[in-house]
Image (cartoon, rainbow, N blue to C red; front, side, top):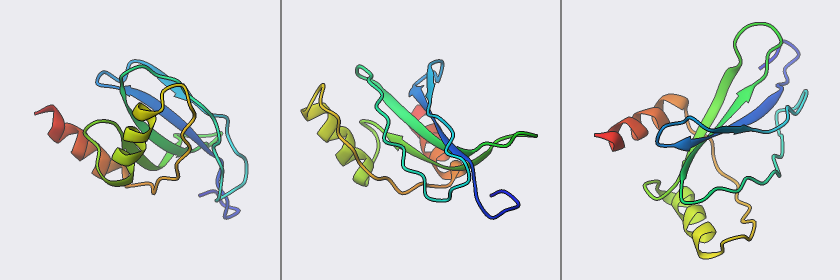
Length: 112
């Protein structure tokens, strides 16, 4: 969060398993309630979605993460299933952000 009590969030989407390809949304300035209604199209992948707070100086801070894919659970898995059942059709879904460490630990456990 910035000094003024707001944030400048944006989203990075990484393709798994190697995270070599990423996509980013635009930065939404001075808001704590951004709406990212942007579409990304992938073929047979799993993704990690990270919401970050853009800072002009220093490192951008991670606000939270979501993992969407075959090995996800709960609403993330339901979203994944809906997308697979409806190819080429946008499937919008709200997700609750999880702490970065929690998602990273889940992904590390799946690699073993």
